[in-house]
Image 1 (tube, rainbow, N blue to C red):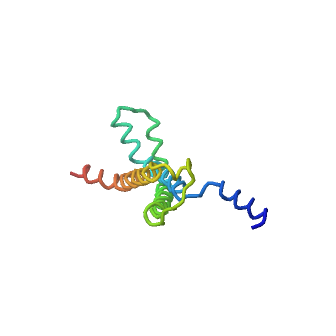
Image 2 (cartoon, rainbow, N blue to C red):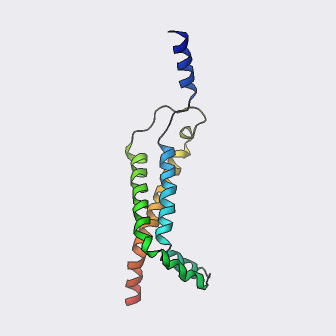
Image 3 (cartoon, one colour):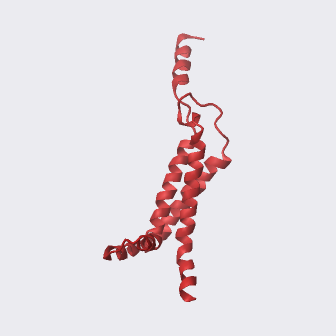
Length: 137
């Protein structure tokens, strides 16, 4: 082994191992933001009114309704790839001490974020249909 090979091995050993949980965490945050964007037209005004917050500006949130399919598509893409990274992709076996993947909470945080985004997108998509059932009765 030459001196250059030894230096190259030392340099690569110091770099932290890239893990898939960082991407899953970012995808879960992206899914939550996109799900909130999808819920802005319908669920958010109802929740604000239910919480006692009122004002004429709440009616302006319905202007986001034409963009709901875009937000839903982005959320589903983030959720699909995020769930793939968390549940289907094999785990990285080697983590550098002190890195994000070495923490036991990294995997749990990504899962919690993905499931929160899933619930939000289900509520955003199902809310208009559920309200029709209650209003027609």
